[in-house]
Length: 234
Image 1 (cartoon, rainbow, N blue to C red):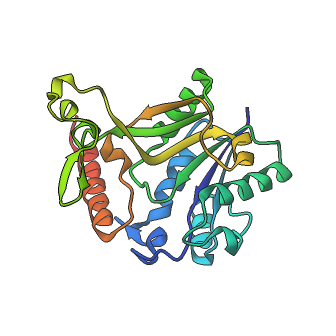
Image 2 (cartoon, one colour):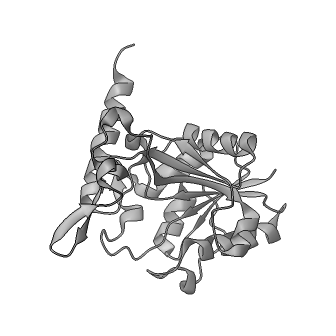
């Protein structure tokens, strides 16, 4: 099975301009994902798909393949990631052995480690599912959610669900965007999700997604804490 990682790193971020190359604890944001991918044991290729020359330069300097510039039509604010992924997968198929599975790594998840990538791919291989997506425990249980109704609010599910105690709640998970593993054939249907999906569970702190300055500052704090923990005597 040939498995290739595609790191999506588009330029033109509106909420945090230049975020993919913004220095995070002394290293460009995108470099954390590249390092995690290159350190994984299960990947045959690691490429970066970007439309931005500066991101391309930084990615290549940190060891990733940047074999093409992403076409502008696949790099707009409204372009679905499946279009950029299909473009990258087509290039991979033409340039080497056909790809059986794709690992999508978003450049905005700097806390994700090589072990998470290896673990998600191992789950994909052993489970036989079509898609593995990384998940974390939901910070707020959906059974306790409310929704607007006129000038009031009402239970999203029912009053009985709202009244459930924490001990009665079933486990609830949310996708965190750090790792996706899926069959390459799914891109022909324009989706990452097949009929069978498994969740690779990660700690929420390992799956921080950087979208705003506040996210960036939180990632800086977590990386600083991680570095301090490594320096502590054992």
